[in-house]
Structures are given as structure tokens and as C-alpha cells.
Length: 86
Image 1 (cartoon, rainbow, N blue to C red):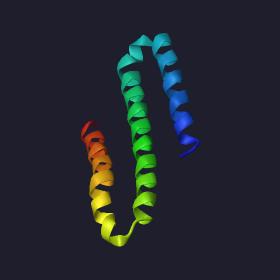
Image 2: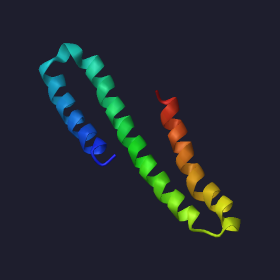
Image 3: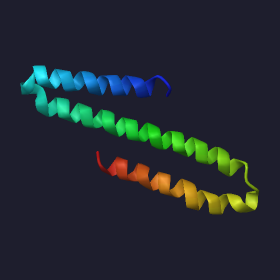
């Protein structure tokens, strides 16, 4: 994931340049840029989910479910919003 995020950012920049040079392809280029943005948001959510998972794992088992509902569920809800936006 360390290499994927900078690659997506670079591709977004390159697609914007491409869009300027080839305006006839604007619709497809815009879709590609939007997909890159969605991918970046997914990666950010995944990083947060990994961090929250580590924090929850360190808790007493009796506290884990409450922490999951408070911290992980909102991230999963955000991910569902991205899935519906397709």
C-alpha cells in the first residue's frame, strides 16, 4: 500500500494533463480521475481500519465490542458509502 498511494496520486496528475491534451476523451478521463480519488479514499479508510483493529486488539475482551462499535463501525459505514457511489 506504501507504493500504491503515490502511484494513484501520480496517475491523477497525469490524467489531468492528458485531459488537457485530449479533450475528446474528457468523459472517460473524468471517470478515471474519480476512480483514483475513490481508491485514495479507500486506502485512507483501510489504514484507519488497520490502526483501529490494533487498538481494539490491545483492549480487554470485555471492552472490544464497545470499541468496535464506536470506532470501527463508522469506518465500515464510510466504506459502504464508497461502495454505493460506484
